[in-house]
Amino acid sequence: MAENEIQNAENEQQEAQQPVFQMQRCYLKDASLEMPNAPQILMQPQQEQPQVDIQFEVSQTLVQENLFDVTVRGTITVKAGEHTIILVEGKQSGLFVIQNIPQEAVQHVTNVLCPTMVYPYLRGNLADLMTRANVPPVHLPEVNFEMLYQQRLAQQAAQADAAKAS
Image 1 (cartoon, rainbow, N blue to C red):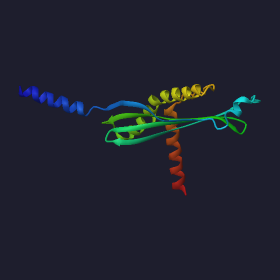
Image 2: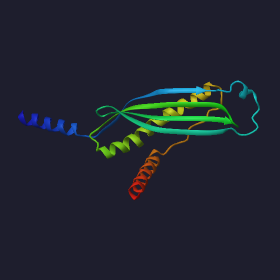
Image 3: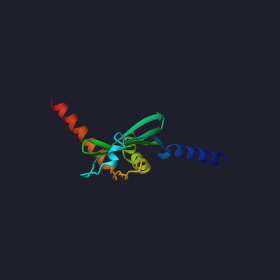
Image 4: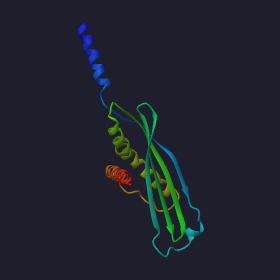
């Protein structure tokens, strides 16, 4: 009987040390749609193809120990000449439990894996907002968050090297 208790205690200790990465919840934190020049701009025939500008960013917040809120913000601006046809912005977030993972790996997880899981929801929500405004939706492109993270690390390293050289 004592052997079983020791074995159970060892198993519980091993399970407590296992890496954990799990999304607890995905939610739309913020969404806005503006059509500042409507209805006039919608009634004018468009002489040229509208310009589309797409921006996005990723941010992370430690909510409590081992619980991270990762947010992907996307902004779509469509203009005809100097006039804005539509401006759509959304923030899609996910709550993630991350524990028993080394700190440098946590940075990778919150900058690559978490946004990869949250981003499809943002894409769908922004396209849905545009459809409900009765304008053709602009779909956000697929994003390689790994590549963006590596580029950001390289840029930070180059800036650090430049600062040391100064």
